[in-house]
Length: 164
Image (spheres, helix red, strand yellow):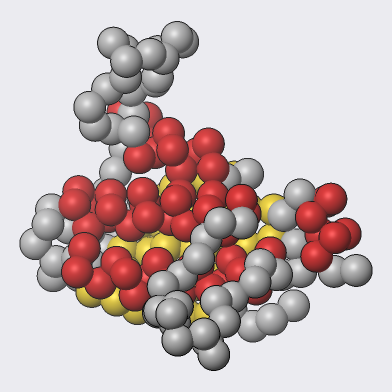
């Protein structure tokens, strides 16, 4: 098992691309998805390609949680940090996200309607549902510090193919 990757960024949306890039590359360590060819001058080496389903799920879920922290916990004012501890293994990724912002009550998340369609789809408040759908497990412990634990396993068929 690789040692954890640690990153601390200011708790504002301005720093989200840095955190997302780090999470995307950590996901790639697990999925073994190909990286952009840095020798090809037509490809921007800073663009992260997250077409692999594992990478897409991890990045999508993480972005929703990061947004919630920056927007709600820190109320778009910054003033705090977001601490990441990312632990990749050969078949999974655990992301622990800590902040010292306003605690969140996960119990107040409105359940989705049983039959979602254009009429019942809410305008906002979907971030937690998106993250839960994308991950194998997600927990939240209010603080301070607040702690989100995001966990995603690589499907067994992909582990066998990626590691053969």
